Each structure stands twice: as structure tokens, then as C-alpha cells.
Length: 422
Image (cartoon, rainbow, N blue to C red):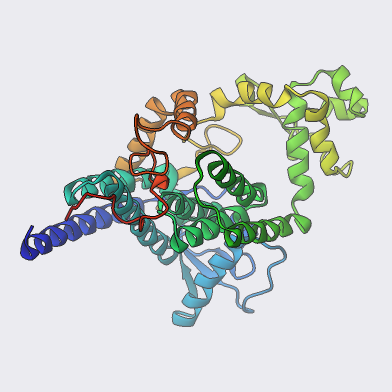
């Protein structure tokens, strides 16, 4: 292919990517996530309250920024946007800057994924463009992209997860190592619930090293162990620890235990009666606890819970974890996230009135829920098998692998051997 033809193809690809990007950002800006009362937990150190009806503009604290009272990565990310906006405007925090910045980054990561997949599969620019469209539209479904126009810590979780996936798709080399370590760090530090992610990534990479001889360098092992240590630190000073422990027990493990089994764990009659009630006095009811009702009474704070209280039910009843999954997943595994009560949907219009054309992204989420959510066991099984299988006659570390992470260690990770494409 001549240089002029290649240049034209690249230009057409850039125009296509830009068109898709502008359209998705514009549509997604009409979507946000419901503030369930957690926004102030991450931004009260710099903001006061929503200034307008849409919640888009927030007023900076008149006395200046305060020191955050706890560590959450979202606090520092949102704080950075706050410092930049205070420096430029001095009065208001506009949520759009934080949202659009993350979406541009998301599109760039989607482009890099498409480039990598096209390279491994030997696709031309047309195939790469199709891959970008599929990836970006999937990332911009309402249940994904809405979190970027909010003050939830999942803002960092989502971006960290995508960086991690890109790292796993990248061929062996320094770039792969940096992306995996950085992605695992962002993911693991975003919320205390995800503290274990770097260790999980390291375990998967170690399995690949032992089973398929994929490279795993000592510096990468050391880096993942280092970020794992960092990710544990926030849990040592977590002001919401007792709240999390209460919900993990009374509104979690205790739900499926009988009064006799609860007494065997050391609960007194009053605490047994509280099983199934959250810290605000809401009792789980209906299938999978999906139709709760307000009871008004809670045992929260009556006893200081410890990590052992959280783990004991599972140690004494080894099948409890699977029973809880069977109990809850059919009713809660959905992209139509809700806050305690089903009528409190998290995905809401940014102007609190209408999604406008952003409704298209909401409908994509609804289609995903209808055709994918209910088949989650099949997708999980397929994903696990895909990590073990290889194409007939192809070496796992060769270019015929089912997954891009299987490129030969001696290749540059950019293009499969013997294949050229524009």
C-alpha cells in the first residue's frame, strides 16, 4: 500500500474515532449517578452544597480547603480538579470538567485496546475502527460512564480497571509492566473493599508463568507487592469500618443463618433479632432481600465488631458464601443499580428531568441487562476456559493464542510475525 493511501486511511480512521468520541461524550454528559448521601464524604473538605438544581455547579468552601479526615483516592483526584478550578474561577466547581476529562481518557484507552487487538489478530484499519466502536460503546453504556459524572470513588475504580485490562492486553515489555502495576494500584486503592486487587493480579500472573511460561520479572513482582502494601494502609484508618462490618454481618452473613446458628456465634437474643437489619433500621425482605422495609430499630453501635466477627460465619459454615451468592445474585446482579430500595435508581438524568438523547446509552444498558446479566454464569465459565485453551496447533506463547497476552516474549508486542497491515 502506498504512503498516500495509508495516510488517507489513517485520516479517515482519526475522523471516525473523533466522531464517535464527540457523540459519546455529548450523549453521556446527560447522565449522572444519584447522590445517595455519599458525595460529601469525598468533597466536604472543599465544597459546601450543590449550587443549582442539576447538581452540576458546587460552591467552594469560603474558608478554603480543609484537610481530608480520611484517605480515599477519590478525595485526592477530586481535590486536584478542585484546586485547578479554584485557581481559574475561584468560586465554583463545575462537575463537567472532571467528567469530560475522564471520558477523553477513556476513549484514548479504548483506542489503544483496539490498536492492540487489531495488531494481534492481523486486522486492517477497518477492523481496528470496528473494534474501537464496539469497545467505546461498551464503555459508554449508562451504567458504566455515569459514574464519571459523580463524586463516588468508583470514578477511580473504573479508570483503574480499564488501565489494568489494557496492560493485560499489551505485549511483554516495560509498557505492559507499568500499565498492569499502575492499573492494579488505581483499582486497589480506590476503595478499601478492593485492597486485594494487586495480590490477585500477581497470583494470576504467577499462574501464567508456571503454566504457560509467560514472563514475570522480579521487578514487577516487587512492584505489585509494594502497591499491595500501599492498598492495605487505608483499611488501617477507616472511619467507616464499623459500618462496613455491621453490613457484612447483620445485613450479610447473618441473613441465612438460623437463630440457633447465630447464638452459636455468640449473639444474644436482641442481636439475633437484629439479623437482617442494616445500620439505618431497614430490614431485608423479599427475594434476595430486594424488597426491604423500614423497621426503625438497629443494633448498629451497640457492639464493637472486629474482623473476626466478619470471618467467623464463613469459617463455621463453609458453604455460606455460595448460599449467599445463590440468594442474592439473581435479584441484585443487574446494571440497574439501586440504593437500598428499587425505586432509588442510581442512573439519573444530569438535569434531574430528562436523559434527552442520552437515553440511547440508557437503553444500551437495558439491553445489556436483558441479554447478558442473566447469562453471567456462562460468560464467567467462558472467560475461565478461554484463559486455559489455545488454538489447535498454536503455541500458547505464540501469535495464535486466544488472548493478546500470549504473544511470543521475543516479539515486540506490536505486530504478529509475518503479518503486515496498514
